[in-house]
Image (tube, rainbow, N blue to C red; front, side):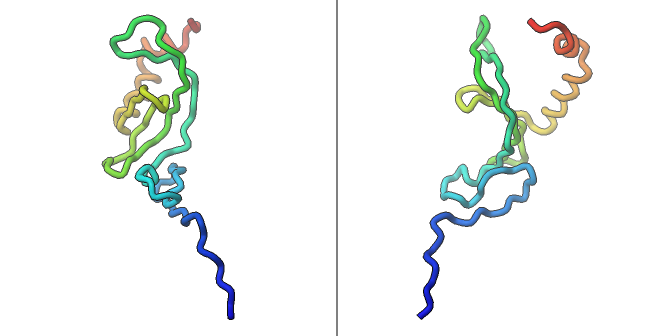
Length: 115
């Protein structure tokens, strides 16, 4: 009688069509399993509500690419994993990049002294 291997305890990870996606699709049965996420990059930032005053609060913010199953496309997302989140369409992210590089007022702030 031949001995069969027991079933694997972890499902196979399905390959993803998005080269930037690091989600282990198929690893669980959770709906977030189908959300496409890039690795992301974290940095320290100060955040506050749009109507807030004062210095805000320090937090770690991550920027990356996100596409949920019901999205028509991918988004550039900045969030702190809690209550701070901004999602830009690819078009909006391109415009932000252009402004960071070309707008005189923004360049003056970014190139000027810190503080």
